Image 1 (cartoon, rainbow, N blue to C red):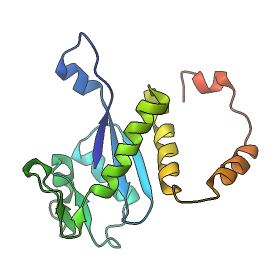
Image 2 (cartoon, rainbow, N blue to C red):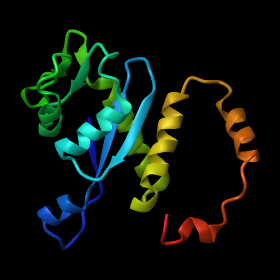
Image 3 (cartoon, helix red, strand yellow):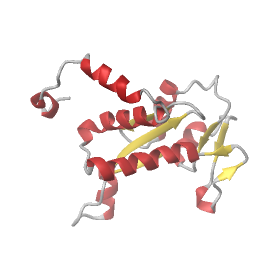
Length: 167
């Protein structure tokens, strides 16, 4: 599934706003880990590269998506691919649904609006990694102590390095 990320810009047309949005792809294994990936675009070739890198098609039982044309172009010949058609108000068909990744997208959007308010494109993947980390450990009791212990082992990140033009 994908999420178009970016706000409205006053005084600009609809087409300009769509071009400025960033694409975030969400991959989630049922009862497994979540991964958000900042994608350069929403084209089929880009999706194919991401799926090839992160999904082992030999091991998965199902691949579920909405009616996205990019997903359809990449997975149309795959017998494991199942499509949920939200346009005709189909959200669940037996065990096939996209609710698991949609709930993660909901938490991501709420976190950005509620906590961070504005996210720079330069650091978008870092925010996505943080939300993936939080989501994957949402029921873990020792997450806070693990985070503190891990932070204590890293060198400080100076503000100049964080805000430098080159990533």
